[in-house]
Structures are given as C-alpha cells and as structure tokens.
Length: 120
Length: 120
Image (spheres, rainbow over the protein chains, first blue to last red):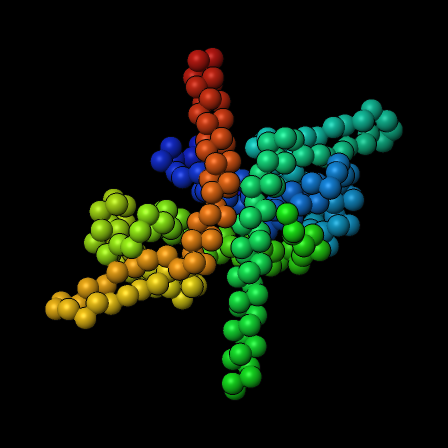
C-alpha cells in the first residue's frame, strides 16, 4: 500500500481521519480490537477472508499511525498481542455516529432495491 | 452507541457512509451547505479550485444519494439553489467527531515533522 504520510496541510480533518482507516479491513480491526487485546490468529478468526499478509500490513500501518499497540511477550515461541491505544479508541468512538448513519443509508438502499423488484 | 459488531466487513456502515462522501469535495460541500442554501456560483466562490464540471457532478451524486435538495426557481434565467436535506445534515453532524479526531492527527503529524526538522 503506498500512502503518502505527509498529508497536504490543507487537507480537512475528515480526509486525514479517513486516510488512516483506508482499505478494506482497518475499520473492522478497530471494532474487533475495541473488545480487547487480540493475538493475530484470533483477529483472523474474527474476520474471515482477511489474509495473514494483509493483516500484517494493516497492523503495521495502524501501529505507525498510533492506533494500535503491539506487545511481544517473551515466551517460546514469542507471543504477540495487539490492543488499541487511547488514540485508536478515540477514533473508534468518533466512527460510531458515522457507522450509524451508514446503516441508515444501507437500509434505504435495501428498501429502494426491494421497491424496484416489487415494481418489476 | 448501538453498532452491529457482526457486520459483513464488505458493507459496514462506515464504508457505506464514506462511499457517499467519496472524492475531494463532497465533505467541503457538506460543510458549506450546512451554513445555508447556496447557488452553484456561490459554492464555487467558497471553494477555490473546484471546477464547474466537478461541482455539477458532485451535486448530482449528492442529490441522488439524498444528501442535497435542488430547487429551481422559475425566473429568467432559471435560478438553481442547493440545500442540505435532513439526511445530509445528519451526515454532516456524524462527520463532526471524525473531523475533530482528524485535526488531532494532523497536529501530531505537524509536530513529528517539526521534531524531525529540529533533529536534522
């Protein structure tokens, strides 16, 4: 993924926020990690279809962006656990109202689709 | 906060919401229209760099998505005025916390940039 981390200073807050949840999985990862710390394998079990490679990349970027904290436990084999930082938790909270609005939008689209089918 | 956590990650609410503000200008258009109805020319004066073609396309899509209401006044030449629908206003409200978070993120990036420059 090639993202410019040096954002245009004129960029609005919404654009800056969306940039860090870019891609298909990061919002879902925020939701899952909101429920507590997870090992990578557990994250993948919660998100079917998420490949190990994409997960690794997403977690690395989320760590760079200060959303996620990685903790390595010194056992054999080493055990890695991911959790949300306060900043990441604040982002998940800020996304709540937008998620609710999006669900209303999806509901509208479903109703329109049903109306079209009923009319055809 | 009532969010379904058992979402299909393909069509989560956040993704559905972001889809309607896709592109460079729609969030800015929401902000400007939040302050009241505007004619297209007034929108372009508020948003330097926004071409007439891109504005027309953005407003058409926002109207289709139920965010914006277009009113044509029957004068010569016809006068077109755009305003937010309730649904569009709700989206602007829902984007508020995300915008605030994004500004914190931009502030962090600026501080990091300043720290790097001071160290070099």
